[in-house]
Image (cartoon, rainbow, N blue to C red):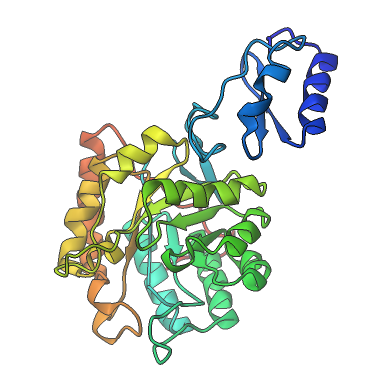
Length: 346
């Protein structure tokens, strides 16, 4: 719209869009208001609105994903998760066990990663497993342990949600909802987390192209939730030397295509703890807005993904290396909020 467009002119354009069966989205900017038009073949109404009073131009968005593209939103989005910010130039480290196994296990790990400088705590209460006989999490009990760990350390928590019916319960405890690789194209779940009004961590699907990954994000955003952080965690290829193939080129590529923050999970990507540090450092150098790392006090006894989990000393060493690399890149590591008054992480 023209920067001097009147409310009447804006309302007229919106009415024309609605009358033709499309959905208008008003997008206020620093200098002018833009109106996004959503729907199948939205470009077909260009001629009907381009000459309306107050309209400067009607520009088709070429990508199949609309709201997550930089064509729609040129400025980078900053996602705030309980005061930990993704996309502001810092690198936020999320660390913790693959699965919440017990109260004591989680609190010990939470203290350790907090003291080493992590910004957020990860831990699965509900675990999707390839084998039905594998440990599948503690469920609601695990969520309660995560909430206690947050109160103790101040670390905001992110945990996975598997089913639309569980979104409300998980959102009551978690600061951020994770959609895992196996559910990256579970469209009912994507719609549900889009309606939950909690920031969402969306992992790339096992074999998703970048376009499919961004279209999954579009599902979340189109249902009202703009706070999406994308997570590259390796894709399935013919290579068997690592658990997955880490596509670090996706970090700068996606950041050029989309305004959403992008983080990297080198633990799931490599599957081997001795490879995690190198790929974490490479991810930061590639411009990742954060890292998601698995840490365990006793990886050999872990009930889930022990071989890729860093020991506490390994994590401490890596955090030091990340700080030094951040300084050389004119970046910084994000810090965790303080714990609640009267609660000490020690």
